[in-house]
Image (tube, rainbow, N blue to C red; front, side, top):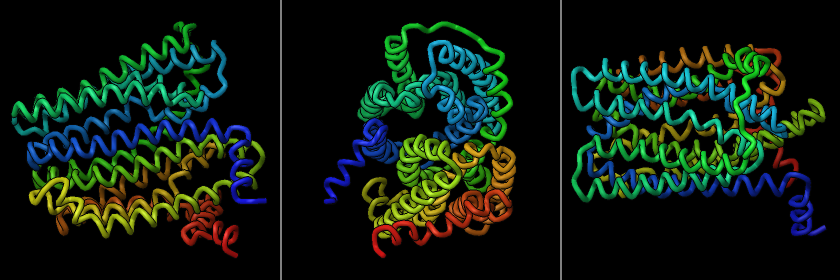
Length: 442
């Protein structure tokens, strides 16, 4: 059988075509935001300078921590519950999720704003920006609509709605630059991105699912409530080792250092975004293999780990070679230190790509305790490593701490639990691409 015919047969398999179409829309969204957002962000960064950008970045970092609390980390569980859900089930899940998110978002908004006001050290500009950024938590309650669309492989509607919001926001940023406006106006465009995106998404969602009604269910609420802690900690752990470093740099160095370091983080986020697209789209396949049995699940997990590990190697090598050139072209000499930060940060993507799907694997096996322990441990390790390394190596120390945390949470900790040692062995083989070497080379 020819390679072409093999590909055609694979493409025609049940579910593959719809999954790939869903991936294409998600990829389109990420490309729009990564390319367009990168260029706009570079222009804005050059205009505002490292100090102003540092103020903005610190506010986003703190708000992101509280956003995770408001979301309860329930995205994966919600998507699972929405898969093949009927009208009543959809309404029950939406009602419970809206109720939970509305209350927690309000609390998170107030807490985030209060923290940012406290660490502003009396700076009126930092206080205003902090409260403005924190208000985005309230708008993002509508993220739950995307869970249903994703479960039904209808991500194109999310992409269209949020894409329009992003384009409007980007155009307004350009106007802010040409009109020489202050930082607060740029932050307002950040909020407009969310507001327009979710407003359009709500209209699309109501038309797509016209039989919506509030139907609170104690059973559904209990399901989310009893499951939220490990998922919350897992999501919180990721946010901490991707955001807490910026807060600690601000406290231990200054906001200018944050502005420089975060430019490296923004570029590193491109790799994370690509992983997120693939992980979200591969989770349904992992679920399908789990339903067949543990052997099929392990085979699928190794295949996925090997594929993602191979992609990470390509990205890491390319980034290390091009980082100095890219930082200079995009941001200019005032952000030169970001190149070294990026070279270190990108190494962590090897561990994320290799073992990031482990959380989904453990959810399928209902190993919530391991997720909880891992999340707690990673939080303490990341904060401890930042406290140890930032005074010695500056912002590079924060990048090192991120790499160490990713290595621990996604790989090393597997060998501490009996239930995950097989996962550790699979991931170890995947570092060397054993699956693909056996299948395509030997």
